[in-house]
Length: 423
Image (cartoon, rainbow, N blue to C red):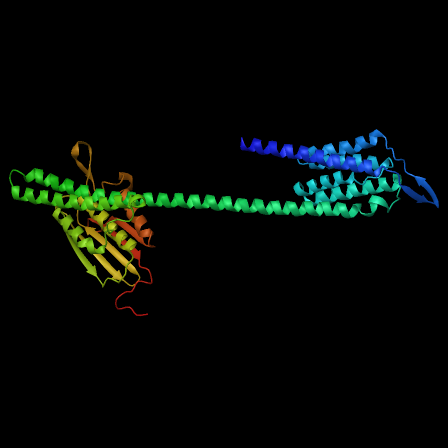
């Protein structure tokens, strides 16, 4: 609808402009037909003041042809030049009528190439110059022939300048639109990245918490009658795990509510909370130890500590889910110059449950059987993304002596101070 309205307005403007130019040219032609004195061989003769009607018809038709000047610029120029040339060849002065030619040339220069404009201008000037010189009363270099070439060049030059300015505006508009599209794409990319980050956070929190609750609930149900004290410990562990899980879920939800309710998020998990995570895993039935190698550098980025915590959390979650009964695990965090190394080892047997409940394979449950041992599970893929976000790597697979190992290497920014390291 908008395009149709613009086209209608443009067409109406062309019609009105063509009528205006035609009226000016016709009025000028009438004025030019007044008696004039022309000196030839020392005798005087008068130009006929009364031009026949067909001469005025040529001028009017040449002007009305300008209605199609933007739709068919080159054919319009050809028609206009032809009619004005015929007017001049009949012996009449094409002074005002040349305005129609200049408008047609200007239009060609604004919408066509420069070569087309100059070629059309040269042909038009040559035709009118010869016709005026042969049939006009002022000779070859008199009357309109004395200034016509200059006016033709000026018309083309103005048209080329307008065309160049339009192209600049079009280029600026395209750049602005492209920049707007880039901003929208960047915004969508950031939204997608944030969505994936939140999905990973939810996966880590829910998987870890629910695994612990599931295991402890099973223990409590199994020993409730014979060992009520142990069942009470399992229920207490469920309470602690659910409280911690709810706290982290609340922190994630607070992130989602920041836009509406301001910044009220709880602090993200950091490396200082690993002892509590290890204790919770131990309470869930997998004896787990934590060892720190090296002195922790000061000022580790919050995102780096969060990524490290989530990698350890996901690894311990997989231990709880897949290591089997009686398994133990160890977590080693090594601080080295420029690197943070995380290792989570367990000695459990990965068991898949086949038809009828029989154990059939030593492979992680969260992976397809075809990719067992390759580290291609969804949780491992998320850990690998977290490590890659900090220029690091992650390896996950079975140990030669049994069990499973996850090893992540995260790059520490150079600006972070490492104790004992001097510039």
